Length: 229
Image (cartoon, rainbow, N blue to C red):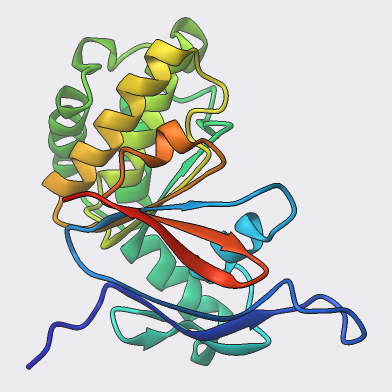
């Protein structure tokens, strides 16, 4: 039996007004465990819209988004939220860490939302903080850290519940070049170590070059740009 892709797009289309052209249409994609993909595109081509569809935050006008074979459009809002909480990890450009929680508490938050017992949360948070290189900072607050360190919190938080799909939206846009390079390498390595699949949304070719494959999103759909050998 063929392996079910972690993510599959099946003739996906989205428009915001019936009298206007589609933002994109006919998008097809299969992404399996262990794959790390970059999607590039100019401003306004629909990268953020596509990300919202992949996460089940928005619904397509036609076509399907299948997460491990589950059609997101066929789920009600509560079921979509539960699936997203269990199976998807997010890394954002703006970090979105909670300033009043410690580093450890921020990273462990997805486990708390999933009902994991406190001792197990703390053990897994300690392991994840060590993996992303900020184990010594567990008790600190985000305001006491550098931008690169805060982004490591975001990566740890996105991966701690071992999601099948990691979505990273311009995760290095607010970082200096050295921190950006370290963050991209860390993100890719951790997605691979977790045996999940990852999608990096970016306008930067340098960032995209850290991925296994690069696709360009434009009016023609998703066009292959490069593949690492």
